[in-house]
Image 1 (cartoon, rainbow, N blue to C red):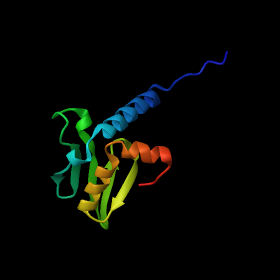
Image 2: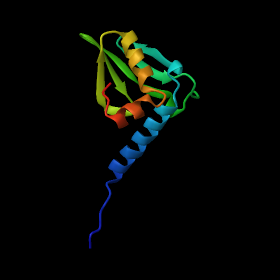
Image 3: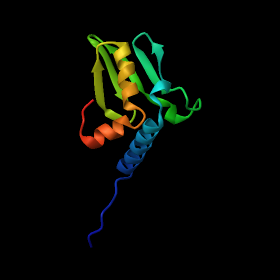
Length: 110
């Protein structure tokens, strides 16, 4: 009969995505920190989260030839390009505190 099979990998990706969006919504933009990993890469974290908590990691910033690429853990398939590290920090702050969820639901682009 009309039996639908669910791809376990797809289900897992949806659960992880939902958890990341929920964590992002709970993050206070004032708690966003950009920490250097090396000369061309930074991790973006929620300073209020417990050390070692997976929800602590918000995303990454990578230096490119013409600026900085931002990768948000809640949307790994998306990249935001900025001209400066400061603008990258502001991008991540703007994504926190429920703003991204609100912008996504209203159809706004970052």
